[in-house]
Image (cartoon, rainbow, N blue to C red; front, side, top):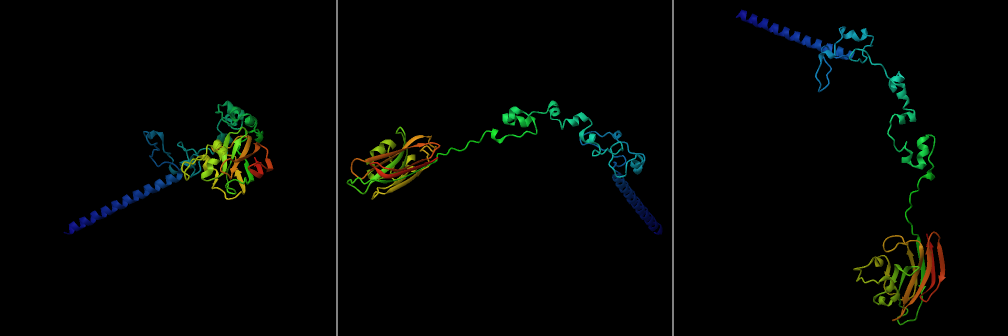
Length: 310
């Protein structure tokens, strides 16, 4: 019994000794790895491999001098080393290293002619044909500046100007006077219909024979089937008295486009009678100049004032 207890104790001591020995070996291995990492070299027997390529153990031979190999080769401890153990030359102190080993190649970076001769692809900054005549001088001479006036100006949006008119209808002493109906529209100098500006009439609008013939009339029923001419005009019922009318037009036709420059006339037709009507017109020219007319009279109106501003 005593012998068996002694054997157990001896075996326990042996196991503990082996564990301590193993722990010591692991600690030494970790210490060695830390020292090698501080020196900037791979660990002893370790091969630097590229993923996907076969490992050649002869590609790297560890230094026989151990941790002091860098110092023995004239490299300061802790400096990065190449596979041969030598520190890489600093690029910041050697202009040739920063620009490359060929001084001629370095000069190409500052010589536009050299860079062009080397086959640099042409672009809009070096090709006068790409920049146009205004940029040719700046493309070949860095000190040249481009004259802004030489560039093509951006096209301005078309502006038709504004037409403002005002007038008072004349009392014709007809059957329905002073109640009256009428219409105002714009025609070209040759008489072609352009646009209705205003119509004041109810069921007797058919008595406006001149306006109906020019515009084609409005055949809508309570707004249904209204034409572009009707939708963009001032529409009122029969007036109970003769009064002043004031209208403004932006020179845009029923097609939504600004009317071209040329001769135009404002037409006015009105009546307060069962048959017949009075018609008057005032002509003006649309163009780069302003037009101002005042005090025009006719059988249909009095005190007609017109102001066109381009």
